[in-house]
Image (cartoon, rainbow, N blue to C red; front, side, top):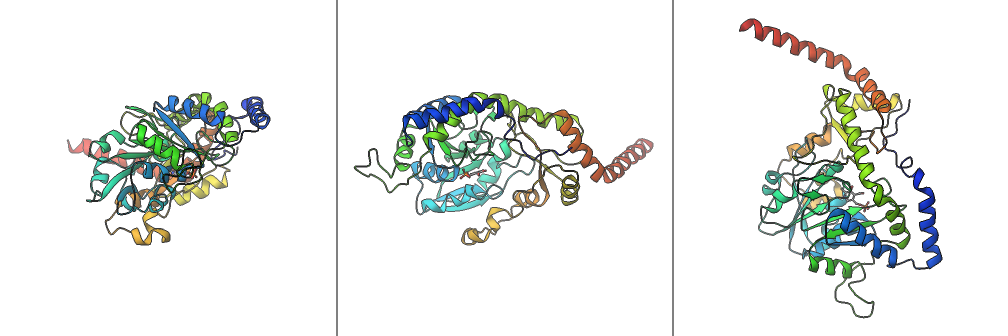
Length: 382
Ligand SMILES: Cc1ncc(COP(=O)(O)O)c(C=O)c1O
């Protein structure tokens, strides 16, 4: 039985009539840019996240650049960012004139920690980007306690919950991507910035609109980066279902645990007190290439996402670091995403775990035997 890496279409099927009606509403209104749908979505999404403001923008990459500039980041500043992330988390920094300074992650959570961030702070650090990678939630409050503002890159974490609230409301500001495969995805590109800081919200609103309030006078050199009315209308239909979809993603992770996948590969660890809405379910193992080949052979979707970490990408050569990033290198070498979706069921999980066991089981059996022998020897020695 083939199991797709992700399934964005099944959860949307029952919503088709409501989505069609929302699209028709926009077409009938003939308002396509910054109209009532964007305003309503911004209010609903801010409320959902637990932030005072949401500002819709064209995509999750612009969201980071605009949020950083709204936080006062510019030429001469350093911004700390993990190297194990999607390239855009770092790409958005030079666009502000600032310099990315790469930090390490904890390979068990794939997120930055207060220690990895502390090690990368410089005299010029103006902000830290904490990425909620794969839907796990970075320890944003602990990092802000170091005394530096945090921009939470929550592109992959819509619907995730941390001890201190929802992703999107944990730091000075946060950014989201509504790329179609994301936890909350639109039908094209889209993004948002959330913040409870009035000044940051006000600046971000202007920056997305050519640095202006009214396209008559211009206070900043800004961008043309707006969420479309059509995308906002589509997102408004989906948002009320995000919690149910997130619960499905969490259930998928639990099913893998219950099926014993952790005996074969290292499973992702939720950061302390968090309830991740797994955007991707990413395991680690020394024989991950073998596992990938075997899963593909049985029709089970799988993908290596970030084999070359960002600090070693050609475009980042001028910002490359000499500081070793061992957690990053380990995650890059050993990770593999396996199927997850709001509707992943026990039968699909059994298929994935069965294929993984067939591929890695021999070594697992050897390891299990060795552990049993060691235990017996230990007992004899007592
Ligand atoms: C962690 C992370 N940051 C930023 C982005 C950029 O978002 P977008 O593709 O909407 O520009 C993405 C997604 O693609 C992402 O996964």
